Amino acid sequence: MGSGRLKILIFFFVPVLILFIIGLIFGPLGSSFLGKEPPSIFKVPRPHVSLPAESLFHFGKLTITNTLLASWFTMLVLILLSLFLTRGMRLIPSRRQAMAEAIVEGLLNFVESVAGKKHARMIFPGVATIFIYVISNAYLALLPFFGTIGFYHDHEFVALFRAANTDVNVPLSIALMSFFFVESWGMRALGVFHYLGEFINVRQFLQGWKELFTGKIKTGPMNIVFGVINLFVGVLEIFSHLTRMLSFTFRLFGNMTAGEILILVSCFLIPLVFTIPFYSLELLIGLIQALIFSGLTLVFGTVATSPLHEESE
Image (tube, rainbow, N blue to C red):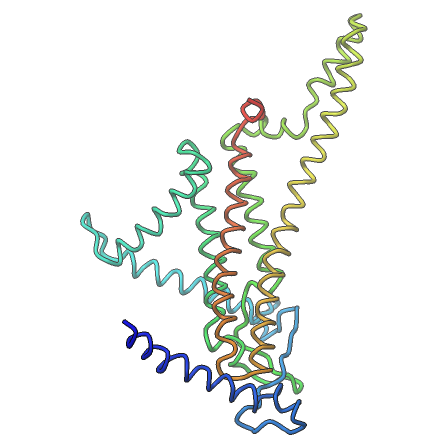
């Protein structure tokens, strides 16, 4: 057991440590301390960070950006992967069919544990789509050709593929779909007028005026006051539903953009192996962001499908 660990230490950690020391000394960071130019083999292009997506070409009035191309690549990979995993489905599943069923079953159990079995089948497709799309965008962006293959335009390098989640339009589009899913689930579960009535509740306000005109002086004014309060609370509730889109958008956009900048800067300062731990960190952050985005959509959808009187009980 001791000799096995020693072999792992020698054949893995020692070469990694040597490569780290070489990158530290001869890379831009070490060379700047020594007052020398780094060798050409260790020269890494200075990181270029652009928050807006770079334009690649135009198709009529449609501008094709590198993040749009990356999102199309993600969709293509997911389509091909789903076709591969579900091809030739049988009652006794093959290994790839069992893998697909395990993914679907795991996500469905996750939805059922929060929403319950009554509305799980309705909520599941939207939550699963958001989770798979967000995590796929994050993981595929770690492939080597993202940010490295491209062309120069006006003496600036433009990558052909850039992480889709680092374009604010992509998180915003997912947030809009999340908002649409939640509101549509609420309307389907409770009915359109019942669901909208929970935001614009004028029943108590109108009842107060009716009682006031029929001579009920004690209860009429109080119902009018509480009716106005209910209307104000409804406006705040509408505002809270709209602000969810902003929080969803900038949470995903900020975390993914910060991770990309961290990888670019670490690779520039110390080449070779120093970036590997940050790739592992990005794998974790991608999973967390996908869970947060889909999990909050699931929670808001569960609340939307529950009548107010059931929540109070």
